[in-house]
Image (tube, rainbow, N blue to C red; front, side, top):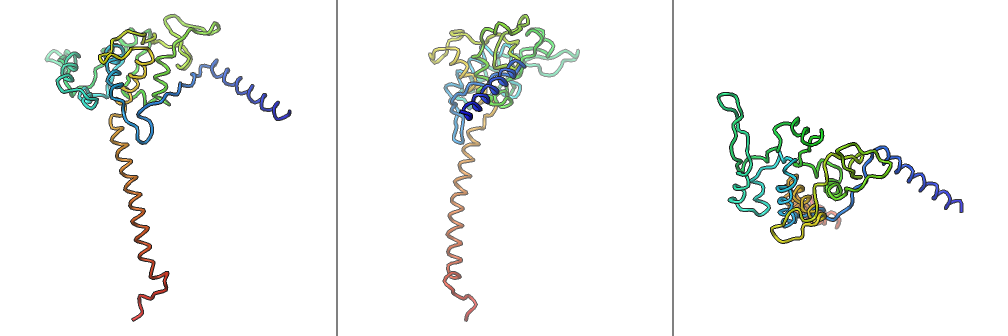
Length: 262
């Protein structure tokens, strides 16, 4: 009885601390999803990543940049060079200044990075309720449990609790620290039409854009996994070779033979 009472007290304390943490602005722990890229043999789901590129292009790119990702990197997702050139050309890129000191603009090229939708941080903040939309290039790696965090954030919008203060222009998302987020819910069922016919539910779009952003953040993940497996295989073979070599070398010693005896 005493043990049960102590356990009950401990659980109550934990619940109280969790409630206090949420009240102090701590974010809800992300939902735990299964991803194809996880683990030492993980690979990218390219069909999902391609759909994620479509979501980014049609939804996310209006506010978020990918300043560390080049258009040409889309080739590894299975896109042809002509398609990539056409997509790049849809964007305007600043390339130096003219004789008057004004920025020179040109259509994007495959070697360019994705340009920001805003000319400067001040313009970005003015268009988004005072908050600058973060660059998404490394989002899934920069955040703790990044893939699950992004998925949870994009699907976790809900009505704020009655006792939760909501500033004007903010939305409530328990997965965001403090709960009040400047970004309105970015996804809604059917807002895009997938080229491959997949149903564009909120969860599906969130999953797809996470797959795409994971590729953006770590495009060499598969090569790294492949190299790691090759290294492990090499080390295993080397261990066996060394083991049997040493057995052969030390066998005469164990049998009491004298190499120096004439």
